[in-house]
Image (cartoon, rainbow, N blue to C red; front, side, top):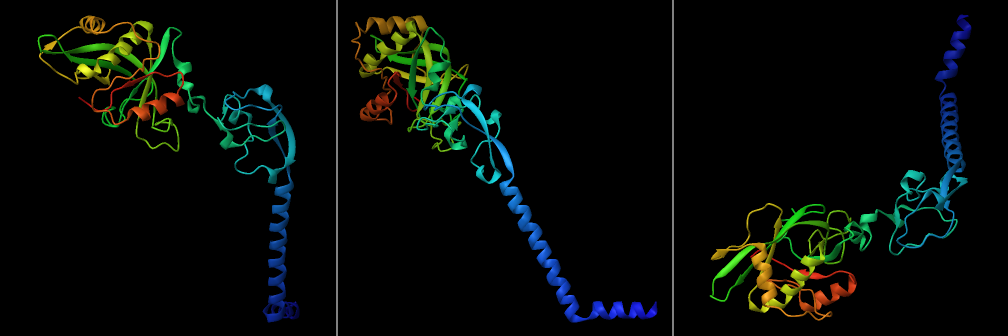
Length: 294
């Protein structure tokens, strides 16, 4: 027994023996790691693919999906593998998903991220409008989608007195976008600088604001504030909304259909050319300019 233990001790203390055993262990670990990696890469997984071609800005439904089995190595980090990641999303404005294609994360967006999606949030009796704004006039981005705003107006009456008051209240904001049309609060590549407040108004107030575009040359001022906020402008006499609307009606005539929907408070940072370009990019929108606090 003693001879056996002595022989075993000599075996394990022999440098050559230790080297050989070490090499065998290292090779075994490498083989196991390589085999595990290969098996993991070729292990089949089920992934969703497009059952039909899906056009840009289209909602993806369960009917648009079918499943296939592929090696797991085919499903990289950008490939969506769960139906819950796909159904209810929309294809991006520039993304067409061909039949048989995998679904990629950068090709799908939320509905709110689509251009013009704010229009779907309007009530059936509302007409879309937007205000030109900036960081200051939105109170450092404190006005956000689903918030409500009040619209104040001031003007000089026939006696030279400055009258002011609340023109419209409780307008629901449906989107806040930067100068490139990106959602300030949801787009990853937005500048963060608000340029447009989107909302809807009834036909009555649509024409009130549109008529007011004809009065900017006589000193009319339009300012927005969060609903219930402090009055942003003052003057000699405070008047009612009805009085302000009567004043607008008394100083305007029939409006040509091609008259631009712009109210310029005299401090707008956007040029007329910028407004025209924006209008072309938002064909269904109407523009009311209220840059800056008065």
